[in-house]
Image (cartoon, rainbow, N blue to C red; front, side):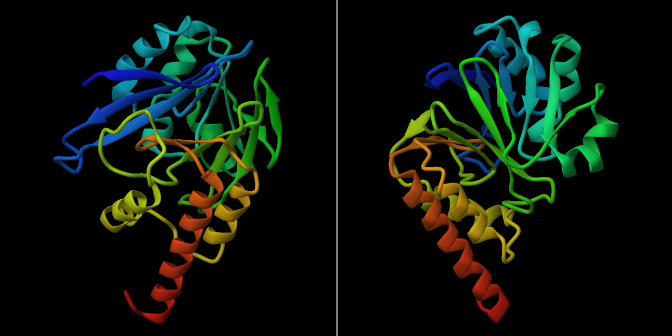
Length: 245
């Protein structure tokens, strides 16, 4: 395996590792995002076992010891499994996450105390502004959240729009259909009354780019993609409540 580096926006790097053994033959990508500024930020740490690959990739962009912020969608191995490895090599780095994630997991599991972020709080990393948004249970996990980089209008979606394959770093093609196909395999979305309204609120941010943790990032009509995904989840929820497929 190798970790591929692509700059998907101004000083925003996608670090992508394709694992062909997951759902072969398409395989599955694990993506992290490095946002450069005076205080660089890493969104997703990657799995602990992937730390050598991902850290080597980051070292090709910047000195890894200069990393300042680490955040992720929710407490799960592929989101934050390597967080303590990153804290060990970056002495000034701090985990930043929402209140729920800190209370139920990170206060205990992180080797240094995390910074608790309130919904809508912004961290100015110098040249980039990172807004934290609570999205409990969307797509899963009661500690779930996303971040929005305000200057480039990049929405870091976490597990939303997860799809298979090792596609290009950025696509203008359909990501809703592939996401629903992956949902039929993984059943990873918490279908509940908050799912569609939460995704529609993300569309109100009018992002330029959707940066996905699994699959190609998307540029194009991002609001339509988010609304279409919300509508699909809404239909699936109604079908599940009616006892149909």
